[in-house]
Length: 265
Image 1: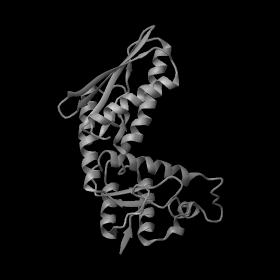
Image 2: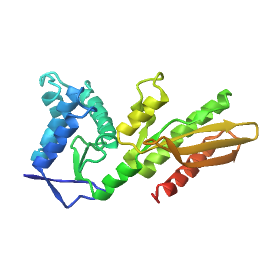
Image 3: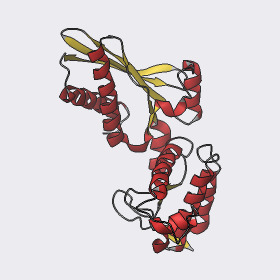
Image 4: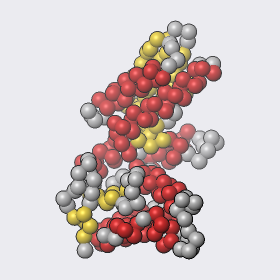
């Protein structure tokens, strides 16, 4: 039996994936560190993938999932009153993103659950997809504000959020928040770098924002986490005014420079 992969760049993939290969990829996901301690997530993902393989689209309704996966009482269960399926599907989407951005970056098969649907999309990853993920996976370390006025800190926080948004749009799932690799504020920098490298990331983006009465300077660098050396660095100077438009423009400039550095035009 085979299953058609779907929705690659908005179009159906014409290649079919043997069901055995899909199940093998599923077992690898479930045994990974991202899923192994989340039994309900494992049960949910297994249920959805098996339904996708069999083509049983109707069996992946919210009601059916609530009954089959979360053991709700058919006589009492109401999807409008019990959000368990919606909540857990949202968590599943996030776990899959983390898995494919880290431990599963070299996987030949990708399983995802699109927003607005409970039927998973299963697609074959091309060699280009895999090579790009493995070579250019970028971990974001929030920029530090080294001017400690309250407005300056808030501007820097907003810049971090805007840059994360723009980098995700430009690069996709290779962008991973640095917090995924740290267990708390007490982690040392060397431990954090080791965790990032072990997860398969090659580069870390870090930097600082300095603000005075007249100007803003963002000093940004890319670090090769395997050896701890800087491979790219640039400074971005702007007139000082605290506005969302400046955060957007500055983030866009940083993103454009990074796209050129990684050859991702």
